Length: 230
Image (tube, rainbow, N blue to C red; front, side, top):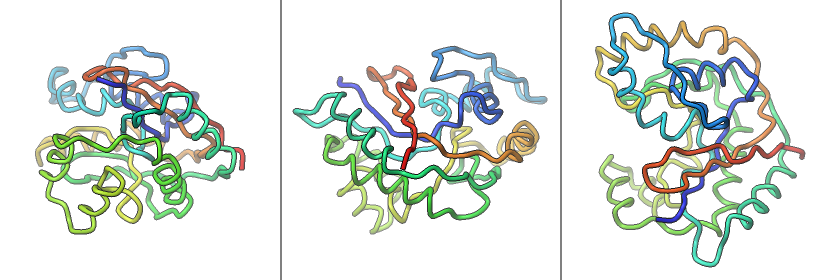
C-alpha cells in the first residue's frame, strides 16, 4: 500500500517538551530511536506500552493536516514543494501555555487559550495541500463515521477527508489511547507532574513537520521540518 503523509507540529528537537513527549511515548520519530518509557507507580510497563501504542506509532505531534495518501499523478516532491511554499509565507508565532486535558477518552496536552494563529496555520495546511490528497477509501470513511459524527463533521469528512478540521479543529499533542476513568485519573496526576516543567516554557512555532508512514503498520517518521519564514 502507498505511503501516507501528514503535516504535524513537532516541538523543537532541543526542547524539554519534545524530549519528555518522546520519552513518554517510547519513540523518537526524528532520530528513529526506540526509547525506554518512564515508570508510573501502580502501573506495569506492559500496561503503559499498551495505553500509548497508537500515539507511539504516529510519533509525538499535534496534527495540522491529518494523514493522507497522494492522489494519482502526484509524487513526494510535489508535496515537498507545496509545503515549502506554505511555510515561506507563514509567520512564526508563540504557542500558548499547555495544559493536560481529557479529549474524547484520551489524554493530551492542549493550549490553555484558543489561538487564531494555530487555527489559521492548520487551515492553510488542510486547504492549500488538498489538491495532492487521495480521497479516503470506504473502510476509512466507515471507521471515521463509527465515532458518531455531527452533520457538520460529516460534511467536513466528505470534503476534506477528515471530520475534525477548520472550525472543528482543536490543537492537541496526544499522549494516550482511550483510557478508563480509573487509568485516566491515575495517569492525569502523573503526566501533569511529568510535563510540568515543559508546560511552563514558552515555545515558538517556527516550523511545521512532514511525517511519513512508508507502509501500512509501520511507524510514522519525521521526514523534514519546514521553517516558517513569512
